[in-house]
Image 1 (cartoon, rainbow over the protein chains, first blue to last red):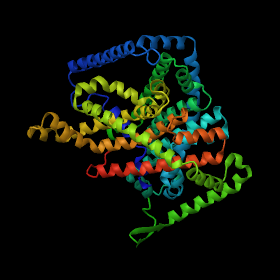
Image 2: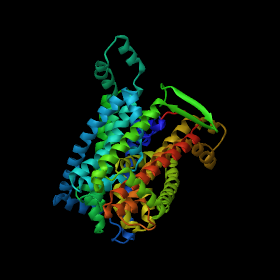
Image 3: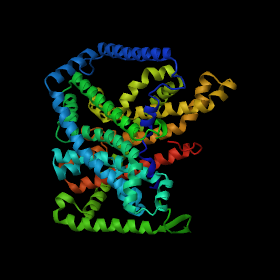
Length: 282
Length: 268
């Protein structure tokens, strides 16, 4: 149980971003940048061509061509289904994750600082964290119904632990020097929390929020599958049920876009809050 | 975890019995919680259940409804999917880490896939693979492969940084370079990738089983039934089974990871 520290370090996320810029020490040559972009575009063209080729080869019932997917995307944008689904989803995400962020950051800072309280709650926290949270869904539906309250609870549970554990572990790794200096000046605990611990843990808060948001997206999609079938999850579910493959692809594309946008924004925020930390091991 | 608290360590029959104050308090807290649940829950047990009812249902679940078989079915789907993920992920990740052009070409798109909540692919997998076991396995593959790809690529890069010069000077080239240097060198990273992938994979399996009634039936089927019957005892019992599975997987993957990365300094 003591090794819980490692659970939420979402290493591949960092590997993914660290290597998103080309590997190796070569980035000085402008011509290289040019050829890199050419390669990337070429790869994209290759992927699209392969997709098109596959769609000629496979039955249209189970596969679709890039053209048809774009067409489906257009109609979904035009008739407002996408806008409706995403506005519901984003509203849910913002509500639930604000609650998760408030609870996660507060508890994370307090329990990171006060070891005994943290150790006391450790078994319960760990138990819920290690439960595949989808298994709690029937209970949540029983208690909160199938509507928005239940969805908020589900997304909260998906986001909270990532935020909480990242912040708590971050607070625990704050440079002991800061605390010692503060102690040496006999600063009372309350001031220490506000002036030393909170500012020093800001970068971890940012990381926690990013991980929480990514995991919260999983919760949002699952809500659409298992509770009321609205929002983007419900859209995917319905398109799949009716075998509208082009629509399904279009929906997945928007999920990808939103996921990337959120990830990038929060990474930028992380860099702003902690410019001294460089990608890889952070 | 027990750092500052006094422990009474003792060796008994080879087991180290250590009792710390924190442990006692933890147990007391748990006991208090259970008593409170029993007292409050019994007023409306159709909604909140009680620990005793849940316990009785657990016994029934394992004795009559063969919960063990369902758990094994779920785990076997997970292992099958994971095996495919690891093979694909290691191959692709090695290429990605080894060849710069490869990483330039595909890395942006793979990083994009990484940001997508991959359970979103489950409906697509239903369409492609039907409602049989293949679908559950495919959902695991969709959820996990990308984690292994990035883990392997990171491992290969790290290995090249450390050993590329030695390997060149020893004239290790071609297949040998992959088989004897790069892949063994990235094993610790792959182990970490697997640990993370298992956490995502078990969710994918359960979601798949829960969403469409898959044969052979698994943990997701237990959730389906509990939900249809609106039976809170069964819901709690199933959640506890899922928790035990989660804890077990966590302990196993943690052990495997430590076993394979004993020599690697902990950076990540």
